[in-house]
Amino acid sequence: MKEHADRPAAPNYRAVVEYDGSAYGGFQIQARRATIQGELERVLQQITQEPVRVHGAGRTDAGVHARGQVISFRTTWSRGCDDLQRALNALLPRDIAVRELATADERFHARYSAASRVYLYHVYSSCVRSPLLDRYAYYVASPPDIEAMNCAAALLVGERDVAAFGQAFNERGATIRQVQKAVWRRVGEAYPLWGACQADVAQFEIEANAFLRGMVRRVVGTLLAVGGGMLSVEGFAEILASREISRAAPPAPACGLCLWQVHYDTGERPGPSVGDQ
Image 1 (cartoon, helix red, strand yellow):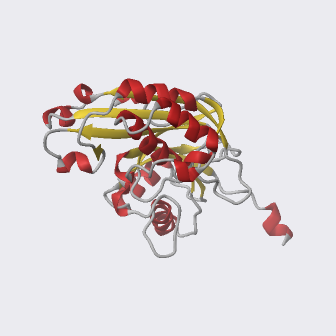
Image 2 (cartoon, helix red, strand yellow):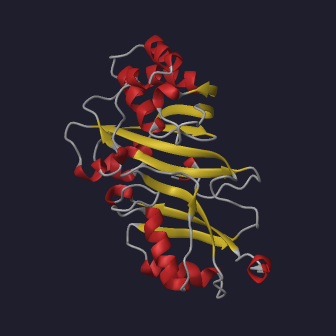
């Protein structure tokens, strides 16, 4: 036992992973459904010939995508990061890719070292629904009122109890979160595909130190009720203050949500900035 205790820890790695979550039951490993974590661990074990536990910065739900998911893991692999990244991308399914990979500080943990996460949610409206856009954006019949939604979204910024919009990941978990940004913008002209589809595209960007389960999609669903004239800004404020999840609108569909970026206290920002779209 002493020999095992004295054995040095395997090197620590960090990676930025992009994935289309349409075919997966979320990031976190499950017994009966394919997951992003499950696929990463399966391929890492195939490459390294040892069990490897992967930790993710964000536990994305079923059907949610990621452009800047950060993972950390340990392995005794000794052939270098470039070879490991190439091997991973050769064996992973086509809807998962490792965009960056490097060794990390011994203390780095993708989840616990993260200072904040940035999620984007896309909504589009057009005369005719677009099957291409449906995979990554939520179709609404009429363009929502961006100004009204921004007035409501501003109420989220700061340290807030956001229990009305999500659930803690365990029974004793706190529901207070620090929201740094919550803003809607129209972005259709910046996306050639969406412009070609003649769609009016709205993007919601929200950044917080952490999120409750289902929080972003429930926030979006409730903000869209404001944008569609079914709920006032004052009504949104009352829902937020109530801490009652039953008063929020149903969650917006998973297809429009993407974990875009993870920020760390060191100033490092793995993944693209919103302006790099």
